[in-house]
Structures are given as structure tokens and as C-alpha cells.
Length: 186
Image (cartoon, rainbow, N blue to C red; front, side, top):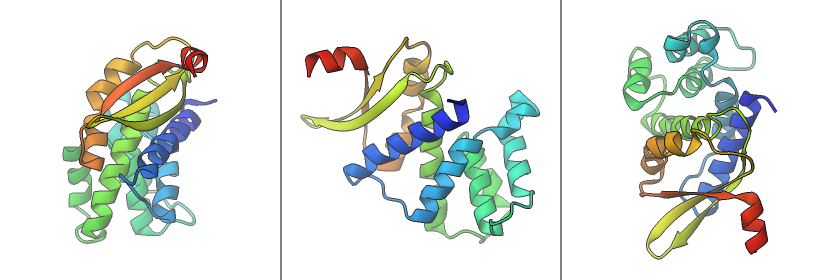
């Protein structure tokens, strides 16, 4: 599976885990934009890796994408180029009132999901197989089931989980579980 397809799958699994417990809810248009944004994430890396976010935003916001209205093209551009809140706000600043405040908040949350999903395939080995969200005591734990060898995924996702926490308004812990060991215990 390509990195883009894997990122899209992981983003959807993450959304499903958070949605199942009512922490995040998106409408059909937002889900579609999430899928496209995850697939096209950092598209500008092909032009210049150091400025991938800026190139991605420019390409998508200034291209004529058939079937996308200008506001949807802008939404797709900020999702696919999401790096942090500062850049997100900078990209949107020149577009004034094109998007409503509620849409902007939703897009920032979706962008955070995509950025976090990218961390879960940092080694490009497609090791993440599924995930779920569980409560243990007063804690929320995102359990990430994988097969293969974790390389940089744990470090990167721990560093970027703040995006998920901002989206759901709660602290979470990450637990990486080798799928074979989990199946053996179950």
C-alpha cells in the first residue's frame, strides 16, 4: 500500500476510534475532505522537502480542481498542508471570511488527525493495523495495534499527540501493542 493510502487508512481508523466514544464528529463533506487531505498530505514534498507545507498549500489552493468549490479547495489545501496552528492560521489569514469559525476549528482538528496519522507511518513500513480508544480509570488510552518493527513511530507520535488532545479536549496516552501478542492474550 502506498504511503498516501496508508495515511488515509490510519486517519480514518483514528477518526473512527475517536468518533465511537463521541469525542469528534464530522459531517460527510468533512469526512471526504479528511480522506482527500490525508491522501494528498505534503504533496509539495516532491517540489522541495524543506518547504513541503507551503508548496502543498500553494498548489492546492491555486489549482482548478474540478468538482471542488473555492472554499472546499481552500479547506483541502489547509488539510493537506497542515503542520501546526501557526502556519494554519497564516494560510487562512489572506482568505478573510471565506470559511466560518466553526469550519476553521473543524479543519484544524482534522489537520491534527492527519498530521498524527503521518507519524504512525514514519518508517513507511505500513506497520499500524488498527487502533481503538479505551478508558482505564480516569485515563484515555489510544491503543495502536501493529505488526512488524516500530522504528520512529513511537517517538514521533508521542511528540505529536498534542494535536489529538487539542481536537478532543482531553489528555490521552498512547499504547503500542504488537498485534500477535494481543491476539495470543485475548
